[in-house]
Image (tube, rainbow, N blue to C red; front, top):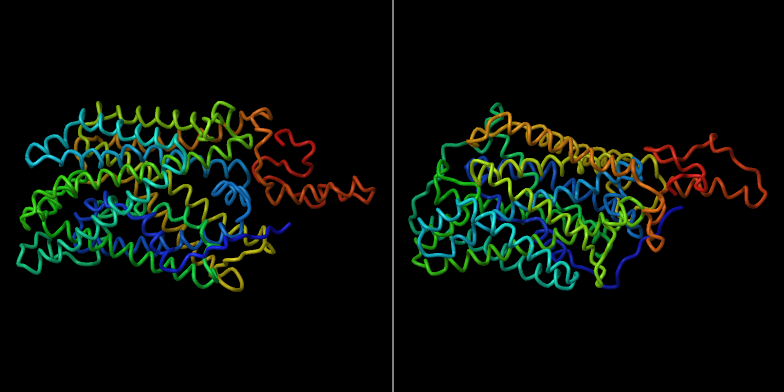
Length: 525
């Protein structure tokens, strides 16, 4: 049964949607990681945009439009192609990835707040203090959590203001400062002897660069707006390419702006963005503005965390109410906010924050957690790309208001294939320890990444195996998958006295469990 798609009466312009894509993706916290590569950082940004950002946006748009009337997000997309167990894995990874990611982005927020003072040496010392960082990380996170408990109205208002004040305006200022600095004779600290094309034979040149894929993560969530533009088949790709171009320009020019005032050997993953702003403001005799920039960046972090606290947790909450999570995780407050999931998420973030005690430095902790989030998120993306291709063959007649390629599947194979292979490449490279990371032995590096990834991937399979019929909320409604609908259609003739088609003649089942031929006897239906 093909689903119809709906769109709102209000339509987004191409430029509005492009800017929304920019706001959803762009974060300044990762610029120092790429500034160490000098001119070749532009290659990495462009490469990741071509093989990851654009394919992600286009594939997510087709899937979002295809299931515009059906809940579940990535759970729906992957579940339709690979079954409910794999679909649950996908949305679980999306949620857990964001949970592990919180300490990394909040570390940046803590460093930003450390620079509200006027003494550079004191500020840098405070930014490197593990106890200070831990306290601020947990304080900002729990503030964001309690704001999320107030509902999406609060989240939306703060996130909207924070995106402008804490990301877009500082990015523009950083680029403008760089232009003024060069045009007025400022000394260029960037090694201009480096080539645009990096030496790909050196793994050390690729490892930190592979984390750039996570800079572009989140674009799949913008696919929900594919039906909110006129003529989506033409205008949505235009918005995607415009948004991608603006995003790449911000990243490239922002990274260059940092490289101009900080030598590569002095770049710190956690502090250099603030140090770069401080250097520019001292050059321009505007040192009074350093605390203002620091507070703005910290506010931007709070706004970004708010969006991610409320988003993925809401997605897995919706799926959980359909019978995939125990009733404990389905509890809400009086506003309908998923309070227990948020509390559990907060407990995990707190535990991760305490790892500061055993990690040699804030920067090493920041990097190893960043790599783990990359690994987990890339697994989800590979499932998404593969599912889009599989659904062309499993649901060939389904309505696709936005379709990659007007006819045939060649273009989807090309776009989805590039996205899958790019994600796989970044996944493999994420295991290689960067030469710039000191204080962490190979055993700890590989142990945290491998054991951490295995545990996280195993958890949703265990939960799925233990699920019970009583977990399903009777008031929850999640539309059936196409293979469930087909199984119901097969069973319908029996009720009318018509000849029954034996299920074995044309089995339509959940690829994971073998259930679906007769929904009346499925043990988890």
